[in-house]
Image 1 (spheres, rainbow, N blue to C red):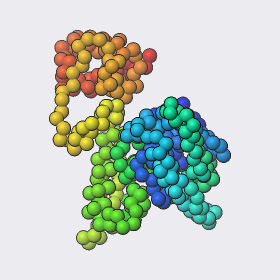
Image 2 (image 1 turned 45 degrees about the vertical axis):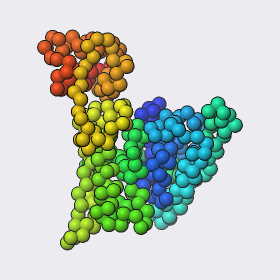
Image 3 (image 1 turned 60 degrees about the vertical axis):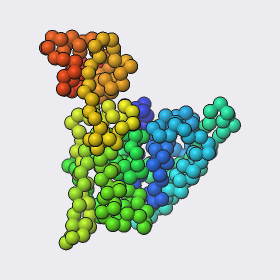
Image 4 (image 1 turned 30 degrees about the vertical axis):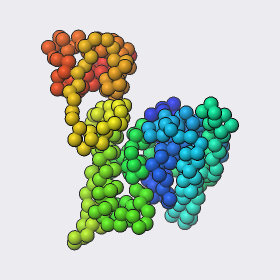
Length: 331
């Protein structure tokens, strides 16, 4: 599964046992989780091999929120990943295996002055066996993971994404203990459901709905007046263009846009020229699966608008452009 997608840099393939998180204790921080996804994506089809994997600091710095990392700041992230514990109970074999994600990681900074730092690592035997024996995989949109802004959001997204591909499954009910484990909430934190809901569940769902191809809902289930479980449902968006455009754009003002408190500025299609240097329109074009030349698609769309008397600042101009690109398709 991972080897077949090695060429696709937009997706990361994880064993479902890892993605669902219930097998991981000492869940890493947000930046360590993003680093983990980059490492697994880099290993790809070789993640189960007993080998050394490598990546350069420049690749890590391309992840949103990680552009300022250096040797000193990477070290504690790898310490977190080294400390993550994978516990896997196999009822068929009646065995519980306790192991780790990493065997070791090495940061080679011999050429640190030029910014050329090489990171290498070997996955732990437990992770490699889990990857080798897994029959269930989670295929995640890598850029969505890299743009999520909290540990809770990443852990919930990867868990639900591992279930979203299953047929006839559109919701899952979690006990509060299971949900805390999935979210990586440590003992003694967010003990009251009201705090867990306000600080972890609702912000994570809002962020995932804003940035991913999925729309999540959370429904508390009560016995008497006490919440005992939460049912999380999901559906795939019919049109993920808005999420893709948000990821392609600046993160400045993202929370305000998600909360609906940001002023909405009407979109206007360029009057002349192509769209090569217009990330907003490029994101819509790519989301529609169109690879026509940027200048040609722009001129053809302007002709389409003129022929129908549609203004370049029409209220639905973005949807019109997306539909036009989708109709043009690949060339």
